[in-house]
Image 1 (spheres, helix red, strand yellow):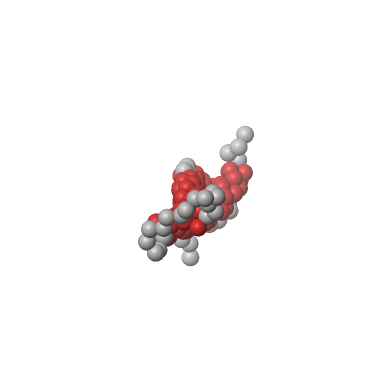
Image 2 (cartoon, rainbow, N blue to C red):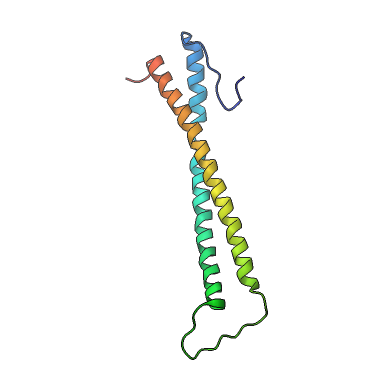
Length: 128
């Protein structure tokens, strides 16, 4: 049983059916959704990098090495801003990884469709 996103395989000898399959594949491959997903994941990774840097700076301010003679002033018992920054960073990086995995899955599907499209071009003799 075929899924709606993938074209059905037609008999090899019917040029009208092959041309219809070719047109469907060409329409599906007009836009590459995987590129949008990669771009989204890169934006999220960049935001995660900023969050990781912020988390590191907050941790360094709380527990890092001080200059000689400097005294650390700790307000409150729990490092609330550090905890919030780490949680937000982990969430952002989770979504970045998820978007990247989705992009890779979409790329594999698009590559399979493109291979079929090229095979149809050869069969139908559309290339000069």
